Length: 346
Image 1 (spheres, rainbow, N blue to C red):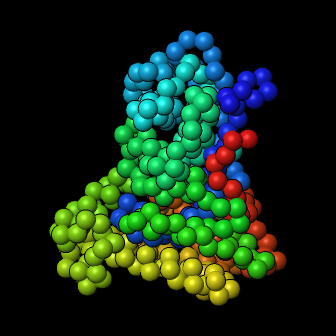
Image 2: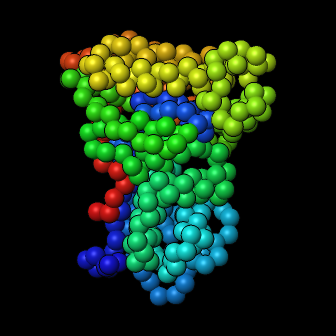
Image 3: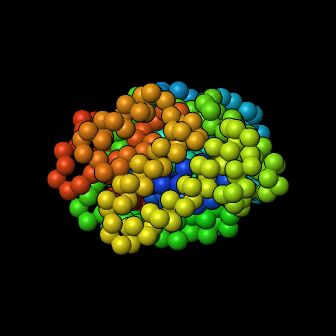
């Protein structure tokens, strides 16, 4: 099973765009992401011995460590070591393997190059080990543990579920209170979704992301709920600042996800644009996740005629998503995005 031509296995993990529903995943809320055609490709080959030999092709950096006892590391090495360790802890016997990977999702762009790498690594290592692929929701949880425990970023499951469970031509509505996934057709009727990098790179572990998670936990404790999405709008009004604004963003963003699903199904693209604008305003004002470079990029897309534009990803930098009418001229540097297939073996 593990031998392709030359004994090399190739897998692909896609990046993702989250159409709407930001900072809701770790709060038990709703989101509407889709996979894109850019991502990370991993090549894996079984070798003699018990070591993992890993190379980040686009960085020309290497790492060697024992497959049975990876130790913590920094940067991209944390993703590789963590994936090997978590698969091993789940009962997969990882043999000596040579790994090489490279991608075309810019790091720090908010398009989830990290989950793309985690998903591609998991599929490659499972194939090398001749192990059956587990349920993809469980695999997403494993990838999330890599991000949380090995990389130090307290992300939720949005990126990993999008990379592993998306469907070609569709977005997926994820309810993070149950992990139920519902496909939503993304027929834009000639309109275009584009991303434009702000020039401000964000990193989950080093930015304000972990601080926002801590604030949401504090809001839950104050309200006596397990997940912030379980609170009522009037409950949030009882919180002190800034917790009140954090909760207001989460609760209003959940409502915008279902409003976006309804707008897409009704073919109301102008309405979808207004929801993107409202999401961005909430992220900027209530969640305070924006930076000047992101605001300038939103303004660029709006000047180009975008019906709506908002930051994507964890915020504090990264890319901006815009929705443009048919025939609109795309701003310089923008890239059209469309829903693609999930992580897979090539």
